[in-house]
Amino acid sequence: MTAHPIRNAAFRAVLLTRLFSALSGGFYNVPIMWWVLEKTGSGTMLASVGLVSALAGLIAAPIGGLLADRQHKRLLIQATYVADALLLILMATLVLTGHMQVSYVFPLLAVTNFVAALRGPASAVLVPLIIPREVYQQGNALMSLTGSLASLTGYALAGTATGFAGVHGAMLIGAGLLAAAILTLWTVPEPRVQAAAGSAPTEEGPREGLLVGLKVIWSNPLLFWTFAVSLLLNFVLIPLEVTLAPFARTLGLGAREFGFLSASISVGQLVGMLILSSYRLPRPWLALVGGTFGIAASIGGLSVATTLTQALVLLALAGLSAAVMNVQLSVMSQLNIPPAVMGRAYGVISSLSSAIQPVGYAGAAALLAWMPLQNIFLVIAALLAAAAAAWLHPTLRGGFDKPMIPAASD
Image (tube, rainbow, N blue to C red; front, top):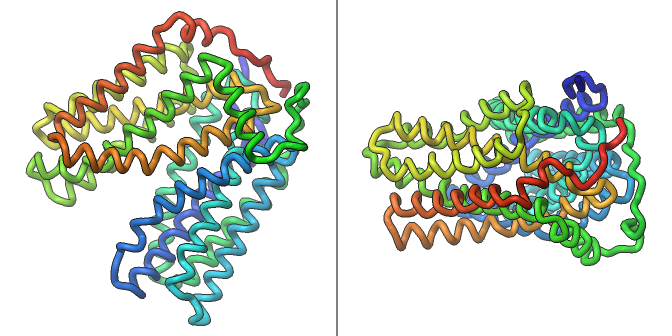
């Protein structure tokens, strides 16, 4: 029996790096948003942050995927952490000296999000290259669990730090956390991947790398549907997020209960990731089918929910099902993408996932203006139920027993 990935020294170092990195996120977002609110007295400007992030991901992810396949994954991740730390130090200096301007915020946000998107494919590729495939599920779940808990904790700590040490002090703490991430990752050996014939990205540009990633996804039915369901999940969960506030009103609830509804999804996800990080599901196909139907049933149930308790339970179940799906989708991608082109494939996935976000928000706004909430929940449930039914196709079901790539050497 293969040992749990936590026993792997390289994995522990990557996990600790993930902890420091996720903690640092709050020490960027909280102080800069608070500074903007203090200077402008309005949160309107911050509403465009999501669009900036999506555009940065759309552009940078394919470039990051191309660079990740050039045998310098760890170095690429460290370089982006260095860039993030320097940006935080720059902003802290500008705030401390009184030279920070509101007009600087969007360029700084754009650069930061570009750097994060550049790092994404290399970070996604690193884990499956340092642990055996038999424990991909536990490894992915533990990484997600650590990142989610650290992100939540980081925002709380950053708010406290901003109150006590000021905006510049919180930013400098964030830079220190990134320095810890850089040093921790230094202990991880650079994974070596044997390039397949015709797959070396040395002479490719971003456009060619994007085409290679698309070809890899398109040529494998199981991988293509895994990618399609992942996009669908991102697309439908965005309207769900937007509908929670008006949903709380229809139940006669206030702002506090709305917060509970939003948090219940995260609680379900954390529980799901905790279970998956400890226990290996013996049948991934069944987990994907059950997870997809689970989200569909939970969201569909919101159309008839009449109490806060019912809504909390349904949303927690949706979060748990989403955690099962996300982890299993990651595992299936890692098992079916050849290591030599994994970065470019993940670059495509990240880029299109970023592109789908503004479309999802626009779709949510249109649906809210066009139909009642209960009908929106039923539409989301129907889309997910259709995706769940597709997993029953013999070609997709058989693919779970025959991954296209051999096991990586430990």
